[in-house]
Image 1 (cartoon, rainbow, N blue to C red):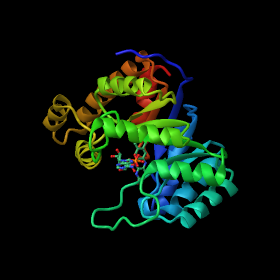
Image 2: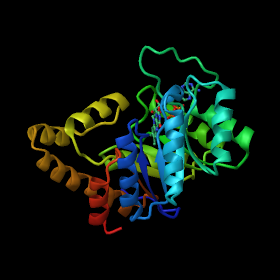
Image 3: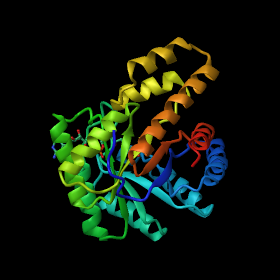
Length: 281
Ligand code: FAD
C-alpha cells in the first residue's frame, strides 16, 4: 500500500453537539484536553433535517470562544434552499469559514422532502450563494456508500462533489487500510486531487461500534469482531486491543502517505489522546 503524499497533513477531531448542560460542560473539558494536541480544527456534527441546528451552532461557537478553529457539519436532506441559506449566513456572520457539507440521513420512516437531494447539489449551492467564503469538506467512502448502485457510481458521485467545489474530503471510518489505498488510487485515476483524509474511529465499546457500523455500512473485519465479542464485558481488554488495532491502522495510513487523520472522538479525549501519543505526533 503506497501512494504519493501530495498535501500537508491535517489532523482534526469530530464532536457531536451535546444535549444536556452536563454534556456541554464535559465537551468544554474535552476540547481543552484535545486542543493540547493542536489539531487544525474541531468539527461538530449536524442532525439531518436541522434537528441539531441550534446545538451545533452553540457547540461550534464554544469551540471558537475557547480559541480554536471549528467546522460545523451541514446536511441538505429534508431542507429548503431558504433554510440552508439562513444557516450558512448565520455561520458566516459568526466568522465560520470551514464546513463539512453532507447529504445527511433522515431517521427511517421520515419522508425525505427538501429541495436538494445529494451532497454535490449542496456544495454547488454553497459556492453559488457564498462564493469561496467557506472551505468545504465532503464525505468519502473507501468501502463505498451503502446506498450506491455500484462502486463506480459512488466514485462518480464523489467526483461530482469535487467538481461542484469541494476542497477536501474526510472518509467514513474503516479498519482495513487497503480499501483506503485502493480508493485513493481510483480517485487519482479519475483526476481527483483534493486531500482525502481518513476518518478514524477509536474502539471504546463493542456494542456501540457494532451499532454504528451496522447503521453506516462500515465493515468491522471478522477477526476484530471475533476478538471484541470474545472480551464480553471486559472493557479494559476491549480498550487495550482497540488501541493496538487503531494505532497500527493509523501508522499504516500515515506511512503510506495519507494527508492526515480525522478522529471521531465521540466527545471523549482519552482514546484519541492515547493513539496520538503512541503515534508520536
Ligand atoms: P452523497 O455524496 O450525496 O451520496 C449519498 C448516496 O447517494 C451515495 O450512495 C451516492 O453514491 C449516491 N448518489 C449521489 N449522487 C447521486 C445521484 N445523482 N443519483 C443517484 N445516486 C446518487 N450525517 C449527518 O446526518 N450529520 C453529520 O454531521 C454527518 N457527518 C458526517 C461526516 C463524515 C466525515 C461522514 C463520512 C459522514 C457523515 N454523515 C453525517 C453521514 C452522511 O450524511 C451519510 O453517509 C449519508 O448517507 C450520505 O451523505 P453524503 O454527503 O456522503 O451523500
